[in-house]
Image (cartoon, rainbow, N blue to C red; front, side, top):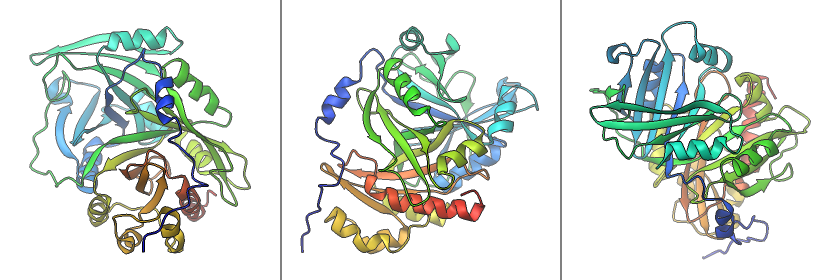
Length: 386
């Protein structure tokens, strides 16, 4: 029997959604996410984890053997996703200090642009704090131009211009040849990246992305949208003009107990990237593979699935399989999405990953917020941090 979901209580992301994208100014055209760099305590072992558990492949390497004296970096790739894992080679310096304060975490969200100098000028002239001035890096494969600006916490954006470069990654890196390359798990690209900021800072950083980078506010969630009996948070989703870059910005809201945002900020030591959402075209395959390889996911109560079909209507996937894997479903007026969240991927309860498959939907799973946040609170209670 065909069912039709009741969309009266679903946020309408489509009414004028194209107008929302149009509001994003075009002074900073961005082609997509170039790479994400994590500062980690042991890049060699972290690389092994992400290859084994997530299905990333070896791409490039920089370290003592390539003339780099202060750090080592391993670059991993899966489809359009590039992850750089960097570890300092001494106990001193900014990378070591970053890890001491934050643990493993995202330092760089690199943005692929056609003109890094123009991107730097456009943002710094509008108030962005300089991370580093435009610079050229050259080898026998050509030249890459990069420039950097600061964002929330110690997170930075680096603009990357690649049009005159044909090498494996960047000058200073060599191809990383490895006999160990587990098969991919079907991850395709970065869908969005979420920043957690301190109480009262959400509007400041939403304004930064609007005024400094030309983004528009795609949707806002208040503490009534994202709350449970105990905790709440607020969020503004900022998007660039072509919709390829989406940055939700979260801040805690008042609640009876400590929210996930507060827990993150306490253990991370300030604002930072809370999670990376990566897309797949077959979430059942992807999650089945990742579970086999040891990735731990948040537990979704079985009762969640008692009403999900009434809420989302007909979908192509077998609901029994989704339930067995803990995959959640939500719908907006353009289609539906499937999503699931890992537990933190390091010992501090900070960075985690979201796996998402969009089947038309452009939303962020508002209908799943209650179950998701109850699952997160259950983990907080186990850690004694709720």
